[in-house]
Amino acid sequence: MAARYILFRIAEEFGISATLKPQILENYESAKLYINFSTLASRANNGYEAIKVYLEKLAQTHQKMSQLYAGELIKDLDLFSFGVGSRAASIRVPTTTKTEGKGHVEDRRPSSNANPYIVTSSLVDVLLQEGKESDEMNESHQEWKRWKLKQPVFNFL
Figure (cartoon, rainbow, N blue to C red):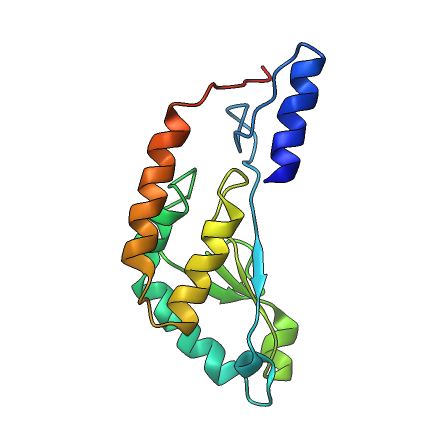
């Protein structure tokens, strides 16, 4: 968040504007914010079993988490997918994680303009806290979005 602030301040100093839009031109692929995560359980021997449980939880909460990600250019908002080594899936399990039976997972859903703190806290909530905080988090995120809409817009193009 500090880097975003600095970007806008520098742009202001030079009389230009900047954008955080993930897709500024129609025919270009949008920029993404990939989140690589692991837990003690997923890095332990036979951690792939914990990863399978995480994938089930992520599939069940896909809609709610997509709202927390601000719905910014999430392809196939209704479709959740995961795959080993698949760069087209919502959640990618690296090939090394599958072959070693332990490791990390990559959430490929959020766009580059998603709030990384909200994305990370929603993953922690869903995977480790059984979703106990997600309703409260969703309310505060909606409040943040309403505040954000009132802020001035800076566009580069």
